[in-house]
Image 1 (cartoon, rainbow, N blue to C red):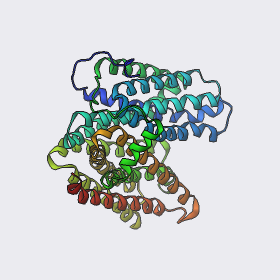
Image 2 (cartoon, rainbow, N blue to C red):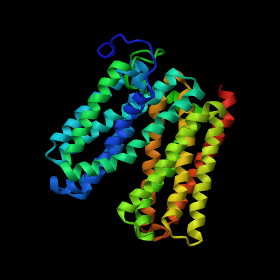
Image 3 (cartoon, rainbow, N blue to C red):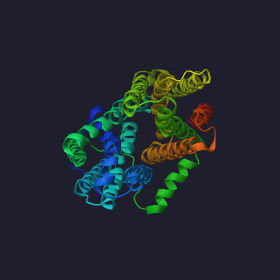
Image 4 (tube, one colour):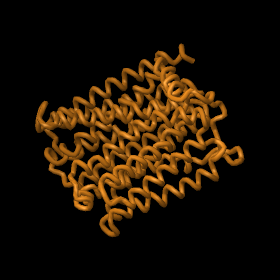
Length: 408
């Protein structure tokens, strides 16, 4: 596989634009179909529950695929695994364009997710290959700042295409974008992993890589910080539609406009990481970001406790949550992939799976609690879950700082 995708390339660093592009195809494909989901119920003559699988199976495939992609890139190199992943993404997008049943559409979505997430995993690993830990945190901040644009424009773009040209045009667009990014990576991306793990081992080697990481208290502290910092945001995703509709009486379009505040805060937070992480250090940036998260959750609780039922009572502090996420996440990820540079791919995949897993669990938990299990008709289940996630993120970040000197 390595020989197939490894023509001689000049030794130069890939541009940030390329790393953003390879990382963005997955979240763009995730979000661009969201406005078309009601349409697909009638198109495929199926149920809303089956169409919902185009989202839930996509997330599940991302979580599972990341586990294998990272170690594969540690063994065979970043470049061949990334190009194979993009090729699978293109095939999945083509399957979606041709789908005439919901089952075929689900197959296409799983292929999109499994292939496209190679860009997310390997974008981080490539940065760690090229830069030391502090510089890696800055570069990941810049990459994720650009990456945050995809979830912002995806639903709007998908809705416009669906309304004017039909739902399949979103799949056509993903085929075209996938091909463009593939060709771009083919010509610009040279191999950055020059410290590959020995070939062989199969599943045993995969298990060995993750066993090494799981036994590292420092790695687990960074990965847990990353997972529960993300879970604060995913908790919001699980509860915000209900809160917006039932308590704040917001229309879907108004909700969409206010949601841009969250993405805007995340972009600014990532810019802050890119600008200051190398100078301040990842430990201080994680502490600062998690502190900002905690203050924001307290602000939501205070606003609603005082009876201020206004969209800005929720989305104003969520702008600050996005800011804290942008400050903390790139640094926690950089710390996680730096514990064992020889296993940077595996570390990136492990960390990403923990993020998706924790986020999915907390999002589902909020939805379950809001359905009437605890404090029905109020915002307090959402605040409670977000506060618990904040506490875990803060605690694991402190543990990482305490462990860092002894692990270096």
